Structure formats: structure tokens, C-alpha cells
Image (cartoon, rainbow, N blue to C red; front, side, top):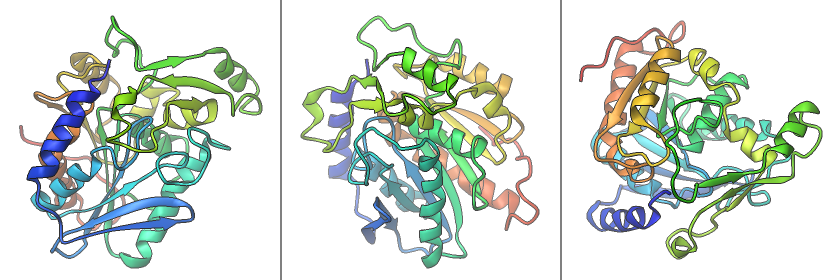
Length: 314
């Protein structure tokens, strides 16, 4: 079971100790809420962050944003996905899985109006990482993205051998038959059926508002890689996979072996020490900042598309 209490206590400690950035603004674009963090540096690299399952941008992601701004001079955009937080949509539901991926393009379109020359980097935590894997492999992105970071990625049930054996209450309880019928009918039936129940304790409702505890088939399909091995092998851009060494959901060594077996030459794997599935948010900023700096330096202005990365020094 994920330790939400440890996460909430750590988040409170970081909130007290971190200095604020020079500019934090909240916006709504076609019903999507996003929050933009900007430091004193010119906006050259924007990291768009997608949250994990059931939560929203208020669940500690502002701490990571401020760390990236202060330590690496990056600008950061946090997003509430459709059906989450204060974004539009019925909580935990989607009319079509493709909408979530199309919204990534829509948000970048909005940001490009203000920052047309910036390079854009995508980061997903947990199920947000699964969504971004689908974005690049089940959808044709509208814009060239400079890099991708998968933080404690939820690769889904089709990534065999990477999950820990659960001895307590599982984080997600899934009803399988609606997914089977939805797949057999090519998405025509049972897309709105509530088939996933997330075990998020009620004790954190005071820390994070607008939590989502139930997902429809469409929402789960948008967030979950259907063929994670094949999808990792076809990711078309420099990608960093960061895995917590004490992750409660996944076996770190198995995740590393999976990444090395199926990842292509764009993929780098790193282990985050003394981190769990949730609090790795607070321990990942250095690795993310160094990765983005390395990518930007290696590929320059992206002429001709991304190139294989040199090995990142340990």
C-alpha cells in the first residue's frame, strides 16, 4: 500500500523550507487548469508535468516545480488532466481515451502563444507517465518535444514481472470484464463503465482537494500502456526513466531489467535512492535537471530531429 501519510508529512516539511519562485500563475485553457512556474531566467525550457492516478497538480507537484526552477533555471507547467482536480469533465471519466492525448497538444499550443521559441519537455509521474507513453506511441504529437521523463512510471498490468507481490490492500482494484468487452468492440461499449477503484485514504482529503477514487474504462485505457514493451522500444525521443529504490508498487531491479531489455537507444534508466513511489517527487529534481541540460546540449536546436544520446555519467 502506498504510504500517503509519509508523503503528506514530507510535503508539509518541504513547503516550509523551499523558497518561492518569482512568478507563479494559474490559468484555464479550454477547461484545463494549469499552473506556470517561472524564475528569473528567460523562459527557454518548459517542463510540462502530468500527475499520477487519482490526484492533481496540488498533490506535492508544486514542490518539484519550485526545485526545478531554483536548481536548474527551468520553467515548469503543472496540469490537471481532464476529469481531475479543477479541470473540466466528470471526475474519473473520459468520453474518449484520445482526448487526454489531444489535450497535451492543446496545452502546448496555448503555451506557444507566449513562449514560441522555448523547448518543451514532458514529465509524467506514475499513471501520468503511462499516459505520456501512450501519447507518443498511440497518438501523433502535434509538436516536436525535446525530452521525456518517466518518474516512477506505471507501466500497467501488461508489463509482466515488474510488480511487487502485494501482501496488503492493493492501490487499485480492477474489474476485468468491462475492459475485455470494450476491447472486443473496439471501444464502442463500456467505455464509461466504472471499472477501477483507487484505494486513496480519506485521511488526505484535507491535504489534497478533488481526489478521484474511481476510473472509467476510457480513463484507465488513456493512462495505461497496452503493450509497454513494444511502446518503450518505439519511443521517438530522449527519455529518462527514474525509479524509486523503495517503490511500494514495483520491483526496482525488475524495472531496470525491463527498461534495458525493451528500451531503445533513446532511453536512460536511473535509480532514485531512499525514495518511495510518492515521495520520489521530492528527490528527483537534480536527476531531471541534469538530464534536460544534457539533452539540450547534445541535440542543440533539434534540427533534423533527436539523435541518440551519449551515456550520462553516473
